[in-house]
Image (tube, rainbow, N blue to C red; front, side, top):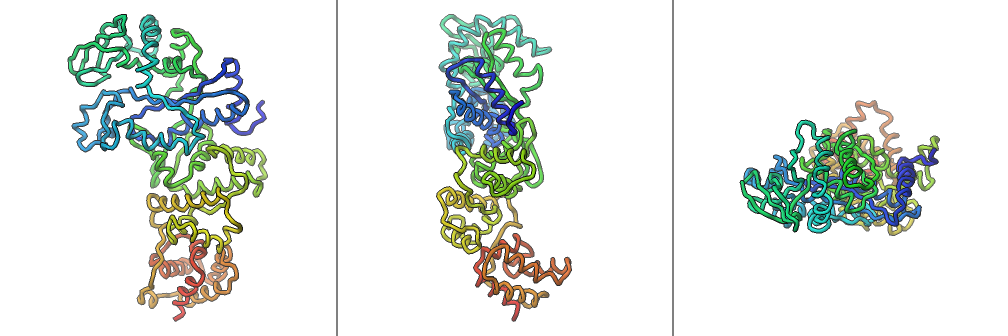
Length: 541
């Protein structure tokens, strides 16, 4: 039995046992992504963060590991409606169908091709979510280098054996005896999905016919693509992969991964990588949930996530939830995700404890795993996300000095900030401000009235109570959220719930000109005391 309580450590134990039997000097971990469209945050879960974290754990146990990420850039562009809609003229974009992804133009004209455009919101941000020790390779480059020898010396001499194994998994569409598992890129129309190899010469030249445009030509085998099952097994072989996670769509018994394992063992003759399957990640926006999908353009990119939240928060979600379990990232719940993270942080630093010690250890470990590098050495500043969003709207998202001063007055900051806390606060202000703008909605928006219209003051029903609130708040020696909250509860204790709703309606009208707003006590605590008292005393006149 494993002594660990966290699933990632249990998985590391199992993986270590299997890897050590391979007895290699350096082990290779890999993940695979097809750049078919938006590179969403769901793709970080299984193909990147899972192997990255296992690598880091096993490196501490003495294993030497190289981590790769393979981009499938040679795949044919399917030209789905969602993909074509990226272009100004979706109908004209049909001409790119069947071309390798890397040969499809950037629909926005800002990068050299489709792959570079959609990779730009993902690849450059990997170092924000990981320790940065991941090497990216593309299948296009592999075909120009290592795949050529693999095709000439392994695939073509055994093409009948490859065909026999693949036909076991193709059901009623077996490949014929003259099938050559190489799909050249047509030199006339550029498509890779409609070509048929007719013959291959000893020097690696392949003769082909294109079923789309009718062209017949000759090209080098490096200017082609293998059948996808052979390609997958080939990547394992030429990169020497020892561990590679895979999505649930490949995990079906007798499915795609099993077929590639069959090819590896019974045709190519090598030990396939260890694996671990993972569930998809869905995204919920405005109450609607959908599976994130690249070619369907559903999801947000790592770049977009970093605009509204820290990388630690996403890592926390991913490592809190076992990869076999469905996970829905709800953009409306970002403030709640921060609260869960902060709670685990307090538990990690011994500020808070749980009766359930196993759950306590699980949260500690999840918090530790949530850091792309190492956790801070002491409990950092914890400012609630919604609190930061209010503050950012009041003082400006980049006005760090004014934000610090106000948080000192509210009691959130009790000592000088270390570099970690200051950096956290600085980015939190910007991110929470962006979240309100993009996802938070009206209930989180704050704009304080510069002047209160006379007709509003004349219409106040709870004039005396608002005036009393101002007088009681003026007596406070500490301008903190908790003290303000207690005062407001005390002042409104004499009225029933229905009246209290109407009172708060007038309270928000007095400050924001709207019927509602963010929680009252946090809002007032972030405003200057003199301003709050003066505003409430307007009701006394």
